[in-house]
Length: 290
Length: 321
Image 1 (cartoon, rainbow over the protein chains, first blue to last red):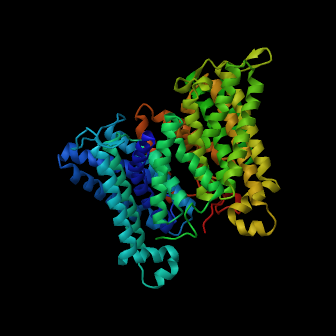
Image 2: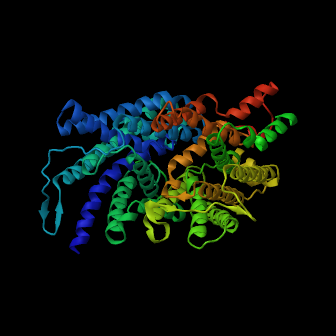
Image 3: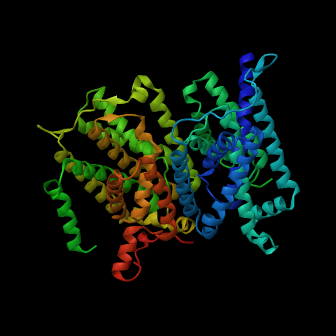
């Protein structure tokens, strides 16, 4: 029982970052109709940006995390404007191929810059875990959970309460009508991609110090983000949040009680099963952005 | 291509071991042949039905492991092991196809990736069967009756026969009713369905044939390198296949073969000048550039410029809604 509680807490920490990845991707996928296989590369970018800010610029850890988010968002914006904007009228397969190209190029550029050896990202938190009754949690993980929750709340506020968010929801529901009402679709797409990429970078900057940063870390992150999107339903923000937490907990339980070698198989199996039995997601009555 | 051109290519391929400068070049030719089979197999799905499989390395790896395990552990001879590899990979294709082709598009891509991910984890973790990350050494060279096909020249002809067979199967398939159904589905699914094309049936059929062909490639690879490890499931293999098909010309019969020869020879030629990472980086950039500047691929581009106008063959046209 104690062990179960511990697994649940670990799963929640992991799940919070998966939710960030998932929210970013579900917005991009749902709103831009773009199968973004490069999503995980923005996660990797976030981890390395934080590392660079700490090791080269010597800034504070919290500033480094913020810098990673900004770098991720900025590169996402550049990517949308240069590569995706000219292809907006193309089919979903065409843009998917482009994003696969971006994925491969980004990953190998990272490999060239940083080398194949995993980097550990230093953090200021004490390593001794806080013991709360039956569970122990490292302060760093507590920070990761807190900041994830904060960013999820920010995303929700952005989508629900701001003018930009309203325009995003309108674009998701009906792009043409939204455009007729004066919504600048190009601006919305750029903002969505930048925001989603920034969230992915945040997840990378948060999980990088917990585990390690290495160039191929984005591959699994992409797939996990996709499983979260599929779990939660396309464009469904609360769905992505719950889906992320569920995936994190399912992975921890799978690793704890079945076999740690198959930890990463949980996400794959979830993709296959959900697509098989509930293709519109676990929580979706209908597809939406909200 | 003209009739004479075809004969020249066939003659060149058949006499290749006679005039090729070294064993190393022959090795590159063999690898190009194996990738030719893989590219043809991926093209059947991506080029003709428009469904992208990003888990094609899984079918390749299943073929390689099946063949290697049967010959190493059960001491089967090469030919039945090859047949088993083709059948098992085809069965895997059927399974993935049944599972995901109702949803198609991006979801098919995701299920194929997930399938490849699971299979790859199994190959690493099921150590009793697969020997884990250490891999299976000592895969025997194939024989044909009293002759061993161990030498590079003999193996070249074996691979060439496999390429020829795969090419003929693809040609037979795409020029039949079935192939027309594939293209109809790619071009306009609703319209195809309305005239009675059974969508899932044809897509699953394409997946089975494609996966079986990738299994053939895997078996040939295993008996050529004589060693199989979880590396056969590397995503790099899938990416290479996709590049070959897209660059060569998806939805054409010659395109994947041209792509396979080009993208096996090119990295080898560049090997002295650049590292492997630069190559992969170049692959990524190249894929983006291809989509922007040569969306139809090399072969359709050349045939279009040779005949002075775009060919009316619907199979060589890329969908542009």
